[in-house]
Image (cartoon, rainbow, N blue to C red; front, side, top):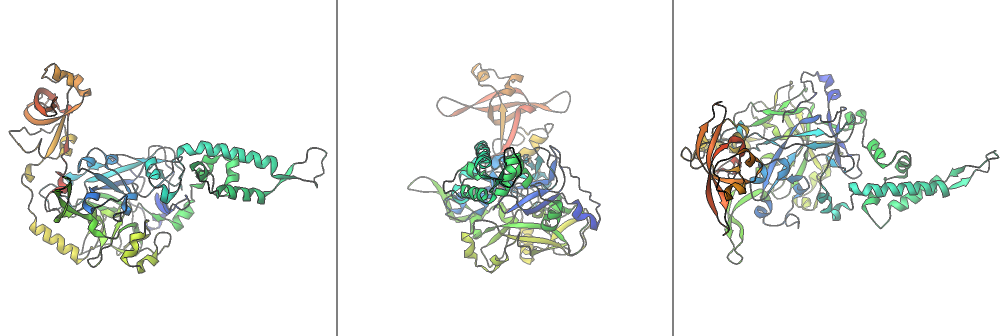
Length: 578
């Protein structure tokens, strides 16, 4: 998906703040922490920002040796990840259980079921930025550019809201209480209308001083009304409709005039003055192909940033024990027959580790989740940014810096933040780089020296390349007997009825039918147009005994085929990746 932006990359220094189109600031939802706000009025379908990075996390309970839901280990990340299927068709097939940490607009906006105004597309797959021969292969996530777009017109200053899904809140009732769902508002609206009628009819006193012969209008008992509303809100009998009521009597009075939805919409907008003075700009950085060899993507400046000025902010998710990111081999439990982790076989670490900050003398990791900043690559010779703790208490709890690592075992919210500060003038289009430190550079240099590409790396074709380029010839079994059916899974649309009829020729109606796994590509014939091919295949067909047998089809068009990695066979699982 191509992401466009209204930002002028030739902006002058003084215009930078005025041109910011995306801010991080205090949320308008009570007790929700930080929120994302737009600095521009946006039309329906407009893209926001530059697309998010999605980092896959594999079989975390297995490798961490417990259950995150039972808090066998500390995993604050669970509040920020999505099901892998939400990023597209590839990530969920990476491993048996995969979740997606989508940095930026995939993890920073709050949820409001009635005011959802943004949604996200699937991720693009950018593995082709480095080949399997590169020492950088598998060192960064290939899941890029998960674009965010508006669902309706959004006014400048509005907080941006996504939909986490009902299950997200239902599973967190103990910590978060009864958060209102979309279905909670009709009942809340009905209650507010009844309450308004009650207050108008009964909570008034005659105005004896009014000189009139007609009906004497009442004077409101504002204090009584406010107290009554407070009693209602503080009721010990909690419910989701009760949570949907306004938080104050002042807001309730506005609800009486315009309703709950419009009142909440008004309350969700901050002035641009407020955002410029109390928020942090999030669109100084855009991702693009890095100028650094083997680095994949990098971060590039969207406007001029003067030496000493703010570049970006990175709220941090803490992981108290970095060992939860270790990845182990497995063994069979002799008593249960189940596969369990074998801690004597350390196979590597979660890819997430490459995006977190830590110190060799501490088990604590700090993982940024703001847009753009995870793309900032290493440069020890001429970096142009440094990191500092934020000095703004809205974004950073400085008291936490004095606490021992064990303190964070009981902290289930993020509360610290880095800021990236320019250490030289940065022009629009410059790649933004940071010195990761000598230990990181030593480890990377050693990795390059020891790197040996996997067998067949030079001729390897990824499933994404095959799917994205229908004119690309698919190797037959005789040409490469390890590709389809071994390194990647091929699937072909073909009808069960055709199999029953013993028909071995593909036809157009099969395109609507179930996909069957491809065992082998037998033959390939180029079409007269020269733009594509038809194939002869052996597909896998289940039989009544519970097994399967091969079935041959010919004249299969390229459009009927799709390809995916088998579990644990993508670039991210190559032995020896960084």
